Length: 96
Image (cartoon, rainbow, N blue to C red; front, side, top):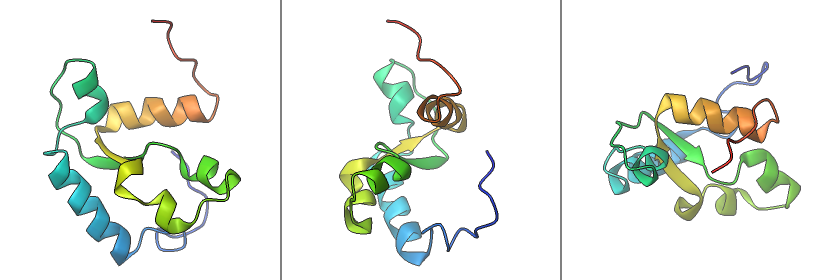
């Protein structure tokens, strides 16, 4: 993933984010929620915005709404990559 030239703090990942991230990882027991819904148990190493930050910005959500725990989930790196590519139109979702 290429994030451009902005630092993590400029992108909104500061101390407050770190605290919320830790709370989400604890709430989700460190398990990837995408894998869990598919019947797999995979260790999560990241926290994902269910509705992406870009879409939240388009909907004019506040930072509090964007980073609300109800919009966050623990996720493994492979699932996060796939989800991000789908959101960016680089990958199509398989038909279920």
